Image (cartoon, rainbow, N blue to C red; front, side, top):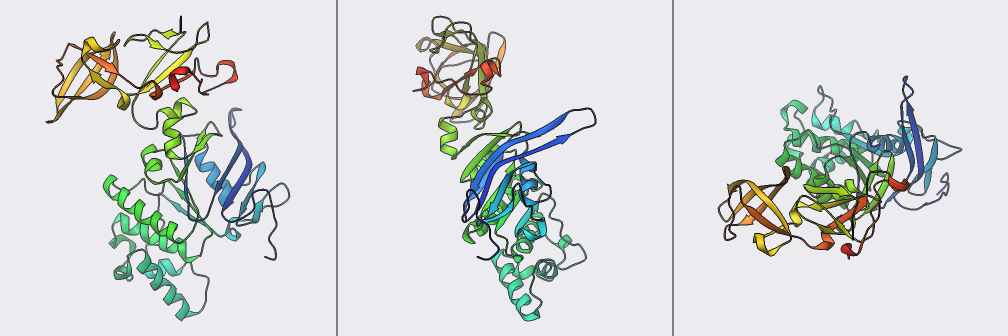
Length: 375
């Protein structure tokens, strides 16, 4: 098309290459976003997931054009939005943004809020398009209401209709559902993302909640300290986490660190086999959901039962070993156990992940160490 400039990664959807940015403070401290690259195809929902301050929202602001990166390129549907030579202002990017604050105009009806995003000046066309959007988001019966007369979930869907009114080629969601109650959050999030998928619009969402990313994302881009450390599907992140942060996505974990001797790492629950000797330290990460309770005499790994909660068909027991609280696991009622007594633990070696320790050892911060126990 005329006016479109080809760039690396050109084509349908969002393409980000080598994005870099830096914030500085008066004290000399700063934050650096370094070499972020990702692609989001049409109709896909991708998630930027990371801890607070990792750079998630910074990436969204740069893609939206709210800030200008120091390096890198951004393209949308084959059109370069910015690179070394050019920068497109946010109002010309055809990108929709949805934040935690829906920012509906309180003095306007829902119909007028949605119409505000329309470009057409023809009254009949505008009304027809608003009607279509309100039906799409399930708010046709609430068109003449004001925002304060709607529930939080309805306000979020009204904000989506207003975003779609501008025919965006990309939608960015920055913690857009975090203000909703947990049950409502799941319902509204699901309905909003279904509408965007069906419309074929690529979505890049930011969250710090792994459960949200796991439930909704087609692909997750993990960002830590300003760098993407892993981009994968949920199943791949679960099976092969590249960092200790990713290994902890899927629930509580046990972490043991030290220097193995004779291929074994001494831990509070007993020795764990790792094919790593010498003076190089390691951290072993085990998810508590992967621990299976067995009779104490049937496993080399044991823990003490601190407390037990009866759940009817099973018990939830709190475990400790050598004075260190480990976490909770579920135990069948048929397995003998009592508070103060020992219980055996079993786990699949494939569910064990080994990383360098201390963090940053040999310039391999957070990078997983392949071991025979992982295969």
